[in-house]
Length: 504
Image (cartoon, rainbow, N blue to C red; front, top):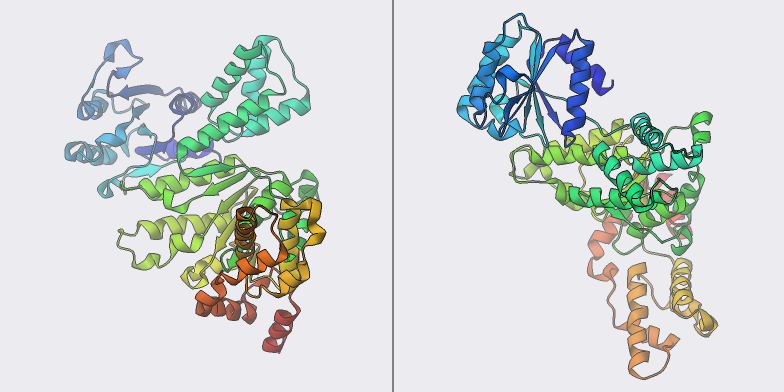
């Protein structure tokens, strides 16, 4: 159900108090005015703290700097007069006992009158004693059709036209921005060279990065890594390559649903984060990184509001990749946290979205400690697949050494004994192999020569791999994966045979 449909339904059902969280104050007020006209041309009154009521000359300035008086104004309007009362930024006054009590009294009275109070606020901030009388209605960012109509209106005003391909690309690049931001960035493009050009898509993308940075929730992450930059993990690569075209229109016509996402569980430093970056690059999709810790705010209701804002922004930017690194640290033991249930509510909102989302947002979550993840996170339907990323096998270590050395010393790669290096570094992760090469380069550089195979082996002998320092945790992960709880990211013949024996 669209915003207009749901909003009009609430008005017809005589919901007295409606709370709309949005930063697009002007756009939502236009939508409210249009709904009021469709429902019998209802009167619309707008109030804010500085100017009071506006629009009607008889009531100009009434309730200025007085939120309680703004509510009392409703009693001046005849009972049978249909009207909508928009209160801007009114969330700041809901903690006042007189305002809260007045709203409760009005909620009873307005059930029998064709009047509705609409609080427009940039965030959801509702005191516990008002949760039962206020109805929250989400106002989404502009849809594709709305963005296209706005761009076409601007082009028509300038007497300019764009090809369908350029127009579609411009519309797609504007997704996730508010209508005000879209107008601003296009005005900037026109001011720069007198018209809208295909190259202005990059200007729009920069505005989008700025918009995402301002939320301080999601991070627009640049990607240069390729699938070929990942050593090993052949099963995972095959799975990803088969889904490379799953976001196309051809896939929709075939009947394929949008891929939901992946949960990558395994040992630190084995390439889980690298995989998330490589997926975005290979599928040519924007990568958004979510730091779950940023979802939590200090004010009542702020964390839940940020979670909804994150979901809204990710869906508006779709198709995209949403990368959640170390998700186990964010939701570990949330039942026991003394935060009045905030973490539990954020977690509930998040996993419900994972299960019910229909938008092409591909979620890539990584976790090191499977024991810390709530069982609900592992249930089928949250992700398309759960992959276990273990320590690389000898063949995979050789491939990792080759990848790094081909980047560092492509001109004399043949001088390094890759097979020996892989054999002499058992239990090393990909990150530890990279650190070994850095240490070997320091050895060679300090002696004014190039580093050799022996330098790499010397550096490796000085590194204690995580597989030894966190042996119990890693063994638990291996046993968990061997029990068939996840698919193997690597093709390891020894682990495969072990799994088969356990499943017989």
